[in-house]
Image (cartoon, rainbow, N blue to C red; front, top):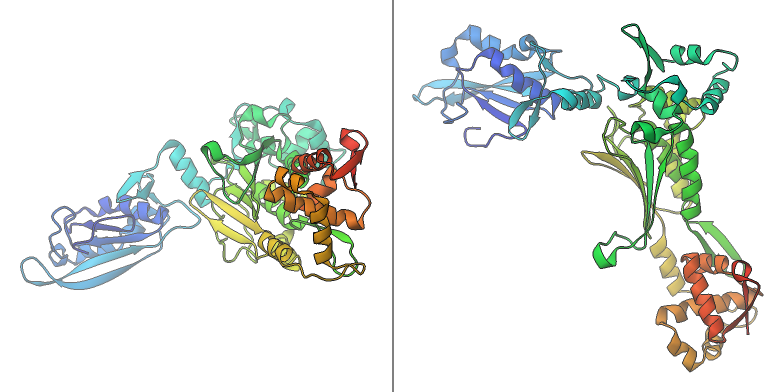
Length: 489
């Protein structure tokens, strides 16, 4: 304690300090992650002063400082450690172990608020103070008034749908909004709340509310930069909450892949989605319901990689929820928004939604979902089984099919593709072409969409390969571009 550098969790104070001057440091530790204040070692020269010379009255004041100098009182405990002071006399130092405050902001008795940042106790003012209050749940962004939004900015269709959900179709809109806390009176003037704008706005972008889902599709397992940049789709969806989920669901569903494989024995080709629908839709719903809307400039991001889907939500887990207990613990950061989403049957009670994410992934034979919390966001990772699929494809047994072995079929396909054709295609194209020819041994025809699912590639990639095969006289086709089908020669 004498030699350690002061840091986020540790501070030294001289026994000569005024008791009231401990308050900022107590507030700072309580509002951060907790910490220890050592009294009896000078903070500059690090001299072992001890506290015996202070007398019993001041020592008691030190012990009671969190209770007397802060409101509300943070949780803490005191500890005495025997030392030999600088003068060689028996003495002791006092340690105040301040516990972090989870659900309330701890202020000093003169109504100032501090936060421990590095080795400093810094006063929180303005936006920084508001963000701290949001994080502690003592202030809720959704319940604050919006200075500029008016009733005419709300979507009547959404309002009517909400009134129908709560059985208030015949009640005046003004009365409904006021009764549900979306319209409040401040100093004799009525204002809409942020929740009202987030849920019902005609044009959410007008109010810069960060009510957005951004979808990114990556060709590979990691995003590359520069000449290797591999983002193939980047779409932002900006809608009020009551339209956002449906819009995102429709767009993302069209981006997710459906894998086709051939069953052993029957020879039938069966389709299986890359991910079961419920886990990724519920992941988006939870992000919309529980994200930190006060986080300026941040939005929900859905990233699709070859091997996984990631859903990132601004803000940390609310209150008592952690990555370890999320499957059975429920707490909402945005209670008003969550209530409306429950009334629209999106948010499920009793936390069964998260439980079903786990169970549906398990039933699909996919890895367990992963929740990761960082200082600024929560990430849900859903992994697919691409490695298993690829290994399965590489290790297909040479089982007979319709009395003909796979080895014979592969030989026949190789003969079909002449040496000149093989030279005109890359190794990857030849491999994919053999998969298509294998399919055409069982089926009469194939189109770009079916080939894309079969090869697990983009439609345009499959279309280019089929067109190239036709030019090389491997396949023939009928129909126009959009409806073209291909046959074996």
